[in-house]
Image 1 (cartoon, rainbow, N blue to C red):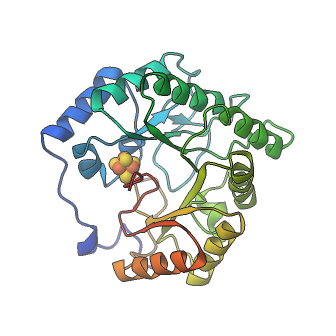
Image 2 (cartoon, rainbow, N blue to C red):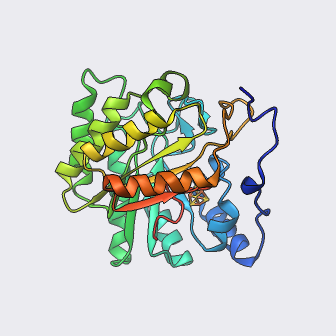
Length: 292
Ligand code: SF4
């Protein structure tokens, strides 16, 4: 099969370069406060659009990940200890950009005893003190620390930690179909990710759960259908479906560019299966238009 290296981007995947006063202002505030974003670290193609609207997805707990997923361009290595001033910096960001809906994500921190759950909680609680009406959407790692004898206990502990902060949306991405985990998401386990979403629904009953998958990694329609059904079985409320784009030269190659009509098909199918919120288009990312 042809890969992204060998073929040109189809016309529906071409976007203008980021520019404009609002974009520059978002970039300047993030830079001044020293806040990382997944927008930059993952080379997101929507950065121009989102930053021009004053929206960015903050990346807490540093920009070095303890895993090595082949679809992701975030640096791998040994991360620094959590920054205790991070919650306050993000509170400043929310104030300065007048953010009403904040998506928070992190690298996977297999090195931390709580997988980083405490930092998510502290960010939410600190921001909320000064901004009562803000809504939070979390996009969390699987909290399955390799060092732990039981990944599931780690997940339960992480959810208990987060129950003190109650986000509006709890997101965890399955990313792809189980057959492709070995090559695309080698440090993760499909069933453990589903389990986390299931336990989140039980532990945080008033929080919506959300997941996302990328298309174009070589998955089949039957496999996508099964993933949607698996998510419905764990009562997942929201789904985002987008085109995988190779974010760096060492990342996994794109196997296929999926036509926009096919994304429309999956949007309709996901609604039919019971998702209450669906976003499916080539440029959809888990945090794209999350406040819609
Ligand atoms: S879609 Fe998400 S990660 Fe991409 S630029 Fe927008 S907010 Fe950032």
